[in-house]
Amino acid sequence: MRRRDFLTGVAAVGAARLRGIAATSRLGDGLPEAAAVAPAQPPAPAVARKGRVRQALMRVNFGAGSKLTFDDMCREAARAGFHGFDLVGPQDWPTLKKHGLVCTMAPAMGVTIRDGLIRPELHDAIAKSMHDEIDLCASNGWPNIITVGGERRGIGYEEGKGHCTALLNRVKAHAEDKGVTICIEVVNSKYTDPEFGRADAIFDHLEWGADVCRRVGSPRVKILFDIYHVQIMDGDVCANIRKYYPLIAHFHAAGVPGRHEPDGAQELNYRFVASTIADLGFAGYIAHEYRPSPGRDPVENLRRVLEIMDV
Image (tube, rainbow, N blue to C red):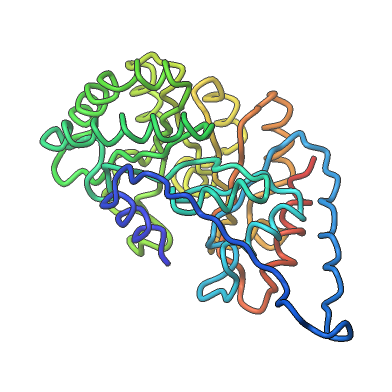
């Protein structure tokens, strides 16, 4: 599923409340002793990690058309040493908790990639959805929700800042009271294919979102620094991380070019990027948003990628 479709679908769902999930299983009565199933072996323990950078995953890391269930994905993530998943909807939060994982970034509700925070005609509906999602995340202990500026469609950069600031000023006090951070994602507008970019996006350079955050002036309104998108639009990734660090709440990571897994075959040195983030004392999460390269085993990929950024 494309992330674009996922965000749009979740926005339509709104702040749906969790339904309890219970499941039990047992061997059938009256089985002959010889037919008894041997007790399952305990799962392999999670690999010990240095822990200076807390890494998370997304479903896309397992590849398009993966046969793994989300329960399978969570099991592999926990074994490898990841902390959680980004963009997981409420219906799957019980599965995260089952495996000791966190929803590191709740999906957008009330906005879509096309219609974001800069649309004043949608502000009442967006503010209500945000309010409800903040409550939902707070009750489950989740730290962040993602949001987007949206497509410009004739709205200028300065006008868009004003609209965005006005909306965030309406919801910031509730986010502060509940301890949930609203994270505005920076994206690239260079590529028109939605797998690689966000055409006409208003928040396509760091300074735009930084100025919005300064105007709002809340510790619970910050930037989601997408390293892949920033490299394409602004470059100088590590210098920009240092420059905007006080305004950054969360990171996304993927290789450039191609949006594949971070490794030695692309232009970003992710080990150095991870060291830069760790040395600043960043206590949040870095979630991987890469698509596996053709021919690679997605599960083995997880371990290699985590090791690169385990500094």
